[in-house]
Amino acid sequence: MDSEKKTPASEDIQSTSSKRHEPESRFSRKKLAVLATIFLTAFAVTKFTSSSEPSVKFKDYSVLHRERNEECDRQQVSRTASLDLGSEISSYERMVLKARHAFKNRAKRGVVIAQYCLATYYQGLSQRGNFEHYELMVKWYRRAADRGDMLAQYSLGLVYSSDFYKREDEVEAFKWYSRAAEKGDARAQFKLGRFYSEGTFEDVVEATRLLKDRFDTKKFLNEMEEYKSKVESAKLDYKKARKWYRRAALQGDIDAQFKLASLYQFGQGGKIDIGQARIWYRLAAENGNAAAQYALDRLK
Image 1 (tube, rainbow, N blue to C red):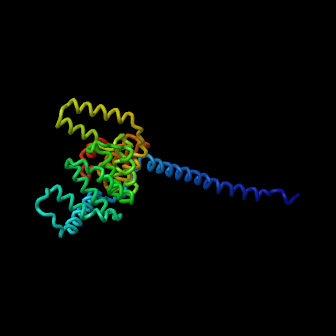
Image 2: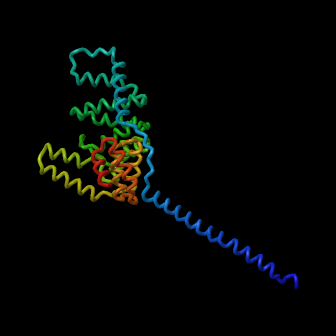
Image 3: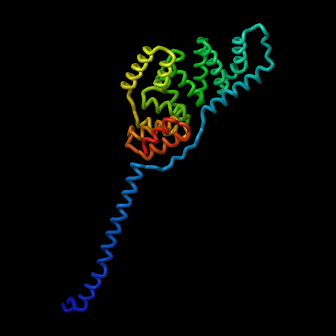
């Protein structure tokens, strides 16, 4: 029993030890509270006003498209150099015969570039008013697109989304733009972004503005009214718009950079993020987009 009694000396030692550790305990709690506050503040700043610089890798798909067409021209010249067509046929007939001679047999055998080249020549003929070649153009673009050719897929999207041929098919356009976009075509990615944010693949506002300049005001107003109704009835998805605009913007697409900045600025498809809006407006402005520069100035 005596061994369990605390002596005055032992009590003094415990009291001294407790007093010695108490300030350290209070300091640790304060330090932890400060560190927690710093962490939470940094997290909030990163989440809601992020300003990290995106890694943009510019890739001009219009150049890729042009290079493919130039390759078609080179192949046609080399494969028809010894072809004697005489001098009595028209330039139109000469073009048709050369294209067929250079590409048709190879296209039938499944050579993708030959299928694509043949489609572009039929497209050129169609655009000159020979609409009987429309089906042949679609046929060979589709053959190449079905074999995974990204440029053919994008071209089919353009064909089906344009009213030039008077055969618009939004479902087919969406299908082929989607396939090209998944393969990385920034132009197709931008088209999908526009579809999800505006309800259309084409820049109808710009088209109708040109219509106003060149034709009558009444037709312009009718076109604008139709466009307004279409946008209002469309099932827009700004979250998906952000996804596709961002993919295109990261490849250097200037229009996508501007559109993405706008979505961030107004909180469409997610929370408002002025930091990201400022970044993308600046990148678009540096690449020559005047509207982006104007929007950037207004953010300051």
